[in-house]
Image (cartoon, rainbow, N blue to C red; front, side, top):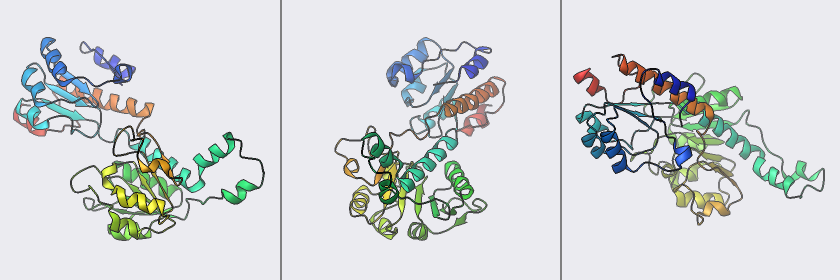
Amino acid sequence: PFSESQLSRLRASMDVTHESWLETRRLTDPDDLARRLEEEAIGILVVESDFVFEEVFEEAEALRFVGVCRAATNHVEIDAATVHGVVVVNTPARNTQAVAEHVLGLMLSLARGIPAAHRYVVEGRWESPVEPYISMRGSELAGKHLGIVGLGAIGKRVAEIGLALGMEVVAHDPYIEGGTPGVTMVALDDLVAGSDYVSIHVPSTAKTEGLLDGRRLSLMKPTAYLVNTSDASVVEQGPLIEALRDRRIAGAAFDVFESHPISPQNPLLALDNVVLTPHLGGATGETVERHSRMMTDDILRFLDGQRPKNLVNPEVWERSG
């Protein structure tokens, strides 16, 4: 998906073909992509989730620029692009606000039991005007301790929102030195043990796989909640399910799972202390507008002979300009 206003900017400088996966509902076959790029002598390719393998760079001789409308570029062979002199540009932090607001919604849903309250009303169980005040009494976010694992763009925005709500915010990120004003940097074990809400914002890497394992989950307070909009692999799933089932933690909210869509056999589906959303944290119109503007700006910079702002493989530019 790409903003019409930004497509108009591009069309003022070049021929543009726009085919959104929102309409096709599928990713492009890499072989078909390579063949089409070569046959149509396409010089600039913009994708979001489509795979761009080494074969694409080998076959598409006219290709000079690949734009990725997301922060992650693991579906594009960057080394192959560099070898073939193709500039790769991404759009970091395009969905920061969207995901941060989704985290807020998940925390509020956990604190106030909003999904359960909705079902209570629509299923016709609201028969007593007093009962919900007793059985569905929630808690406020203000004054609670929010622990953020990973203080990148999204983690920082979540921290700012937490502070604005009056939460005490701590964070853990071994790659961040300065932190964010109002946020105390702590060891991961201390964060997990002391937080009322633990929100995960780290990339999926070999180092982050199982970062919250059974031992760390056991450190969480029985009144604490876990929120994961990052990647399912960061939390060890077996101990997590046990902790939720045994109420050793109060509950959790997830926008990411081991598979997308979630498996019908996933034990999370049987729990009543979780909130589950279908991997839509970044799915806002504003995210599309943002990545469209960022990508268009860098394409026009490239056409004007200027270095793109969000250049992934700077060695190409340094080598050939």
